[in-house]
Each structure stands twice: as C-alpha cells, then as structure tokens.
Amino acid sequence: MREEPRHDEPRDVRVRRLKLRSMRRGIKEMDLILGGFADAGLADLSDADLALYDEMLSENDHDMYAWASGQVAAPERFAALMAHVVGSVKLGR
Image (cartoon, rainbow, N blue to C red; front, side, top):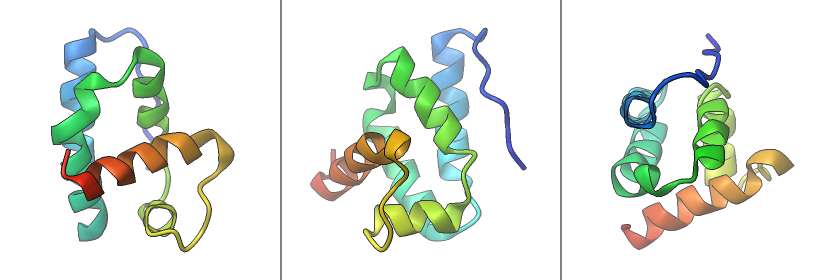
C-alpha cells in the first residue's frame, strides 16, 4: 500500500512518522537497515531529502533490500539517498 507524502505536516511530526514507518517494514532486514538509519540520521536530513525518503518508503521492501545490499542498483532518484542510508548503517552512525 502506497502512502502519499504529506507536505503540510510540521517537520517534527514528519520525522516521527517516518521513524515509525522505517521500523515497521515488511521484512526484518529493512526494519534493521531503515530503523537504524532513522534513529541515527533521519532528523539531520534536509526537508527535500525527507520528502524523498518519504517517497522511497513507499517502494517495495524486497526492491529496497536489493538496492541496500548492492544486488541491484537503486533507481537514479533514490541512489544517493540509499547510499547515505547504507553508509550510515555500516558506520554505525
């Protein structure tokens, strides 16, 4: 189920919503990857990157896992953000 990004919500509400969506995914691997990133670095993203992250969370978990694990290249619009997510998780940030 795709959730439409909400452009009218306050930033703190958006960050909390995205943290929750990051931790409650369809597969455990993405819970760990996205949940770890959300705890460590989500609040530091720009508003534009938060909007892009919001869009990315609507993608299929198996597709996102393939991007995160390097099995498949992420779509161009998500490539830099996914690299940031994976880099943050690998570094424990």
